[in-house]
Image 1 (cartoon, rainbow, N blue to C red):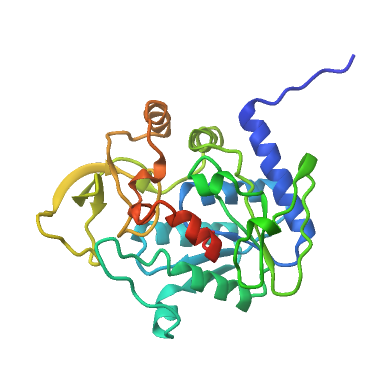
Image 2: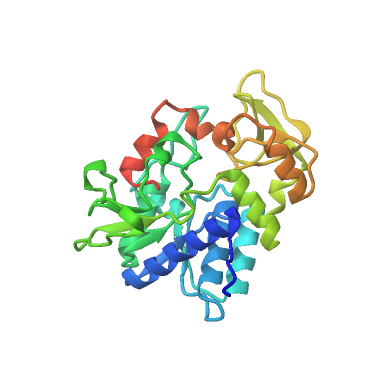
Amino acid sequence: MSETYYLDYIEELESESIYILRETFSQFDNPVILFSGGKDSIVLTHLAKKAFYPSRFVFPLLHIDTGHNFIETIDFRNDLVKDLDTKLIVGSVQESIDQGKVSEEKGVFSSRNRLQTTTLLDSINQNNIDCAIGGGRRDEEKSRAKERIFSHRNDFGEWDPKNQRPEVWNHFNSKLFKGEHFRVFPLSNWTELDIWNYVKKEQIKIPKLYFSHKREVIRRENSWIPNSKFLRLQKGEKIEVKIVRFRTLGDITITGGIESDVNTVEEIITELSKMIFSERGNRSDDKVSETSMEDRKKEGYF
């Protein structure tokens, strides 16, 4: 008598993501993983390693370096690339600025986050990349909630809803014309809590920034923004020392921390189960306008 084997929900998510990664590798000529150094891209990289084990790691990592990263993020990235023994492609926003392709933003919420789009599209074109695999999840933000798993981008790198393909019964259409490319999102159906439960289950190493630590910060827009050489203090703002951690990692100039005393993955999971606001609620770049993420998506940001 045959034995029935059931997957738990985390194993089902893992299985779906590995299937998508294998489909991506088989359907595209030069796919890469978009690596930011955050928990989602780390989990995505872990899944990609698992999808082809014991073979070598098959995807190069593409990192768009704004020059305003947390030092801890860059150190983690370099260590991971060394462990995976894979190729790292770095697109520099500073080079895009120096070449006159983009200009520094001005104002309280100025950052290099939006400038990444030009650098990303240049990196895709220069390296003949036909697929960029990202760690975006549908629960993160409303503009990501309607994203396809295989997301078509035109020859300008733009997202057009009219050009997206049906995804019936997990059949993915990767047909494209010269100059076009796809973004693929294997973590689409995961939630933030799923990510952390998987980190716990697989004992995945993550940056210390996600755990509580002392840091110089300022209070801005109901967030604790880290002090750095890029920060410009506004009238009434003062530097304080707080015990904080970060739920999401972006540029140091826009990533807000939360006051927390958690020091383990288990404690993070417990803390998250009680929260009622999105992890991107402390990202000042998302507060520029109601449609800031949607606008960047159409331009080719993610």
